[in-house]
Length: 549
Ligand code: AMP
Image 1 (spheres, rainbow, N blue to C red):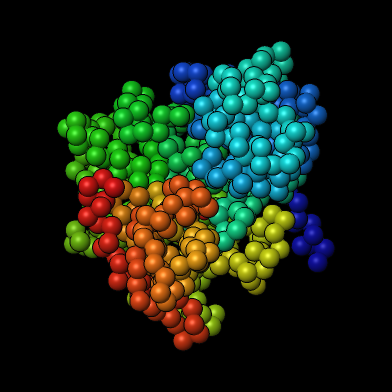
Image 2: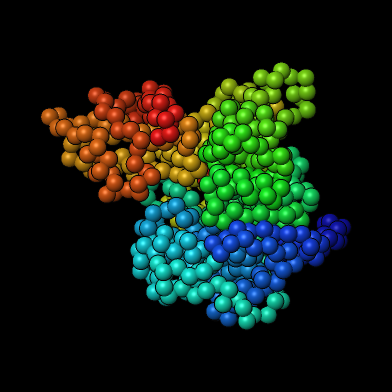
């Protein structure tokens, strides 16, 4: 025993913290550039300059009385200022809450209150989107509000970011001794009701960044230029704000210019080599490139995930010599779980087999443990055919939700997180999602709750029953379609129901079609058999999508 003890503690106890990533990039790659298109135009700064601005912000936050454990919200595009928040807030021991700008006002109010944010930093062009959310939160009066990239008439009382940091000194002492301290809070949609918070630690964030840096994961090198299109309010833009500075690669931020034309211009001008975004974004970029018979000669590859990548998208970019790398992840897993690369075992395989492998969600990255289980909790075979729910665990997987015991009790069991994704895994370890157990529709990377839509529809006097399912859509990958059964003798039109929903849910939630059917198929235990409805109406939006609807 003594001998064992004598062998302990011979390696240094250096905590894994976010400020250590900042120190690394400033010391070793201080000359490398960050380019950011923000509300007030293009900014160019080196990592060294960036680090000095982070220090100023950290000092300003401290002057505002923000410290250990306090929550600070961002409501922002991908910009250098958002990145400054990513580093300054956790480095003083506070927690950055990256609020989703697509939530509707009540939800924004809910997350600000649930997180008990003491301050909100927002991009000026998002002032009008934030204002109703602030108004919906009873605690907003006490909050400090800071506008970035100029003033917003919608939030008049906001302080100006540049004025706030201008007088501060450009060095600071980080205050994180414990790698288990909370760093970043991100909310994800629940099947119904309020969003659920996932609270990343310094440790989980740093280990995730290392895992992402592996060659068969995101594989970014110092000489790369990386443009994250995936928003920084979505699972930390897939960890890119940490994994890219770790490598010293150049970072480019698109800010509010999220339309295909603006993105193409920036990808081209800044000679971006690696990018990342959901399929909807890449479909838009593909169409715009096609219209102009253009290409992106510097772009080598992009990570695509959040929804399954369509085969045509991968092929179209292959033809431009740009590789689409398919990945799977979740808010609860920081998010990277799997990345699809062609394994050595496929050398000499047919083009069809290789394409098939690339179109799967990929192979698990080291550190991510997984199981596939049937409804009774028994492991199913990894034969590429047997489907089961995917369970995961690992150093960057959530152990429970933030202040939400009810949702935690459902999702976390016996040390595993239940993903709600129904999958197969083949003999080579390729994961493929074949169905979704959770009652949510993912439209262009954002969740829509089918249960909330059903409840809203069933509140209509003419409706007896309503089931909402996600069906394939060319642009948004998936859109909601409602199947409704009318009460006997009652009448309603699609338009009428649409207007009804318009008063109750966000506009982009309204189903593309509301179909009147005789009965909704049910399982043995009386639940809606949504799988049948999805199969029956799989093509109902195809013609609409083709005409741009
Ligand atoms: P979020 O927490 O919003 O990132 O959503 C995570 C969920 O999105 C997963 O559980 C899947 O249902 C879905 N998802 C993520 N990546 C993919 C992918 N590559 N293919 C299919 N579905 C995906």
